[in-house]
Picture 1: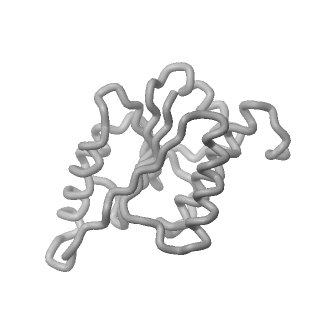
Picture 2: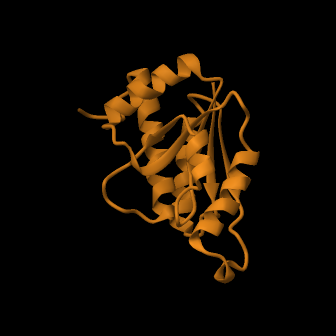
Length: 156
């Protein structure tokens, strides 16, 4: 199974970039993993929040294949514990050809993206910056991989 993380806008904080890169490399030891960045929209002052979500949504949808299993990282999604995320990931590895996680822009996702998604996951009930969500998610994905393999990274 291939795993893809799509993100709207680049990560600018150098500390987050380093951490995300480190975890992405680690994830690559367990499964094929790729990250794609959709460039931030330009001249957004003249756009409403809905218009921004629509344009970002169009860019997201162009990257998806019909057979993809699409998971949105969204505040309204399922909020699993790390062990539950590992179990969830292990099940998806058996059925998905390509598992695509998406971190949206500052205003979330368009209705078209919600409609295309198979599932939604939440990392916490707390609000994080989009930069931080990327770091937290890649760490949790790596943690799930180590749990699946029975490695000692996770303590419970």
